[in-house]
Length: 232
Ligand SMILES: Cc1cc2nc3c(=O)[nH]c(=O)nc-3n(C[C@H](O)[C@H](O)[C@H](O)COP(=O)(O)O)c2cc1C
Image 1 (cartoon, rainbow, N blue to C red):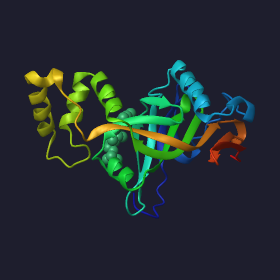
Image 2: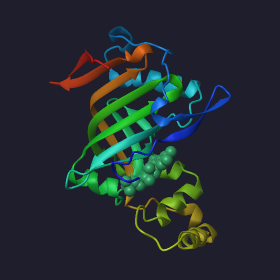
Image 3: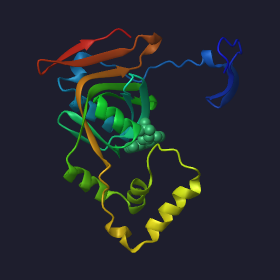
């Protein structure tokens, strides 16, 4: 859209079976599904996170493990994309990717990252800040070998985020590998594996009526969690 445009953005918004045409700026929901306080969140952010994740799974939210990962390039220019949470350890969240992708390159230069979960069905957001490091090769192998063969082939043949001339290039490489005799014994390529994000900050957000949302943040200070309530 042109900058400074005065165009009025209208959309078709289907809410409670009644279709309305309205301005984007008029879309407004009331949040009233829950509340949050210092006692409920406890003293360990990842323990509480696990509880909320379980509740999201129970509520059948779409892609409960999808999280937005933000990194910065060498000029400090940020980039965000969705990745899937594949494991939790005592103080870290794990995901898998191509180490040679832009996100992998960013982490190589600056391993400070942010992670964000948004579970709209429960009116909840969770934000993390942390430090990403590669997990052990054994752990990456174990996860790689547990993936369906199609996903393993995909990881091997796709040069993630590189420009390709067309889709058939990708499909041909995929088919060649799927049809080959070695497909069942395919090994994890060195450039593919996991990261563990060790968290230094966590914030739990629960939508409340009248925009007076609940926000409880943990930040790490001298290896201890400081818990604080933030204004919405
Ligand atoms: C729901 C969803 C799940 C995704 N999960 C992953 C994942 O676990 N790992 C991954 O590398 N990319 C995943 N992607 C693709 C990334 O968002 C992104 O397109 C890709 O990793 C390239 O990112 P980069 O160029 O910033 O490195 C997922 C995308 C979506 C929409």
